[in-house]
Length: 190
Image 1 (cartoon, rainbow, N blue to C red):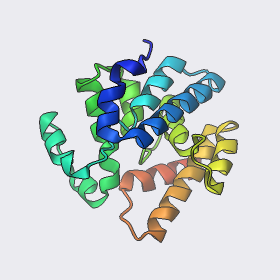
Image 2 (cartoon, rainbow, N blue to C red):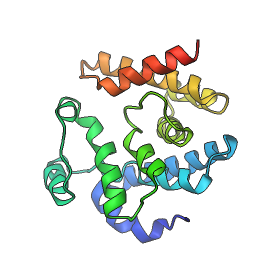
Image 3 (cartoon, rainbow, N blue to C red):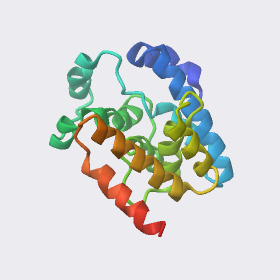
């Protein structure tokens, strides 16, 4: 299964904006690079990385109508942490609008924001590719990048810790999936 970005470019750019679209391309490339190192399917990594933010709308007011269009229900947890909606909605869009039916790809899209315990290699790759893509030039991303190319589980623990610290500093709700994921990687890295 090969990715043809030109086929979807205009529609996705219209939905997410040029800046976000460029980020999606960088994540796709980073995911493919990590997949090569960890002997994961490079095409699947590229596809999951490409579609990971396909539901991160530039106009947030359109989220309810898009959810209704694809029959997606926003959970109470998502209402408390609205920044996670796009990942789960994105998996639904990837399946319904872009004909992606591979469960590992859809899971990688779904869990790229919160993480979860016992993620597949592809899920970890997409989560980390989103965190470390070259457009992310802050110190935490640089450290996570170094870790990601050595040990995915240690990179997951570090990135989840940083995400949670940022949410605490911003006084935002922390999705339980993130807490559970962080604790899982803390335990397995001991």
